[in-house]
Every structure is written in C-alpha cells, then in structure tokens.
Length: 87
Image (cartoon, rainbow, N blue to C red; front, side):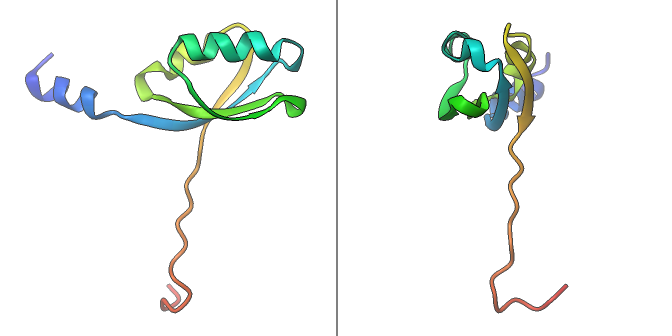
C-alpha cells in the first residue's frame, strides 16, 4: 500500500449506521457490536434497532455479527436556508 493510500484509509473516519437486530437477543447483539468497534448512540430495544458510529472499514465485520439483521448508513439530508432561492 502506498503512503497516499494509507493516508486515505486513515481518513475514512467513523460513519453513522442504523442496525436492525434480533430483538430477542438485543443485549447480546449490542455487546457484540461494541466489541467489533460500534460506538452506540441510540437504542430502540422494542423495535430491535440500534444506531451508532463505526469506522467505515469495520462495517463488513459489523454486518457479520450474529444477530445483526441489517446495517444501513445514516442518510444526512441538508436543507437550504429558508431564504435561499429555489433550485
């Protein structure tokens, strides 16, 4: 790996993710997700949903955690200021 590629990998900072997890094993799945690098920012136990941040290159490891049903990136929507011209 070249020095530039290594620098680029180091810059792939944490990304926001939303997980759908097995609600019957919620606590175990949350703990396993933390062990692979997830920083939990929200828990919706009844819905079996979890949100957090994780380095982008760890997403495949997170998806492989037993009890994780899906991993979706958070979508950030930026709205223009109210007085901005219509595009």
